[in-house]
Amino acid sequence: MRKSLILLVVGLVPFSATALAADTLSPGIWTNTEDVYFAEEEGREKGEWAGIEVGEEGQWRWIDPYGASKSEWSSDPIPNLSTREAGGWQIGDTEVRRARPLSCWVAVRKHEPKPDGSEDWTFERGLSIFDQGGRILLEGGEIAPDVTIRVRNVTWAKGSNQKPVRVIYVHTNDMVRADSYSWSSPTSEIVGINLRWVQASCSETPTQIEGI
Image (cartoon, rainbow, N blue to C red):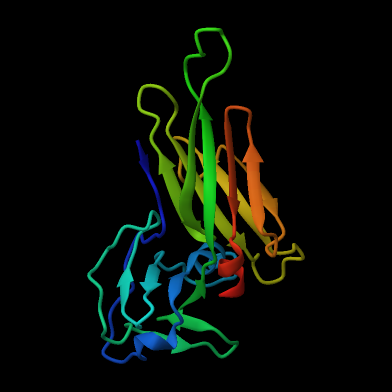
């Protein structure tokens, strides 16, 4: 049994009476993942993670890392939304960035081999995720390990000389520290990982690339 993903929210951003209209954010998924990760390193106060999904008609809702809704759809202005002096958008004091949608396949080795002794695998394809902290949970039940796949488009803290990368993580029991990870260029259409017992690949479609 599998739970697919599409979004995340560990906490909601406080509401304010003043906000811009929801249609000022283009349709898609927006999160403050990178702002939260590097706030303390940059000497800023670390805020709560937030994810928001904006529909084609400008309606919006809060979501969690797996794409589950945390609120009803709303046509009201997005609370605390404003433009940033350096460009882009923020909700309150935390920057939000638009995620790029990806489609993944994941294979997990089963606990027991096939009758002939060869390895046996679970396999799922067409799993939706996004690259601003999105997650997919694959529940192996009694036949395979539970695995969570996570993807980020990492931009490092100010002052770092490291280049931005798109990273795919594999988690089992700990969602803070990954079992392992790999990376590609942020402009690459695909990112994958092979740990022998789990394999995963996430890629963009041509329409998704053109639309963002």
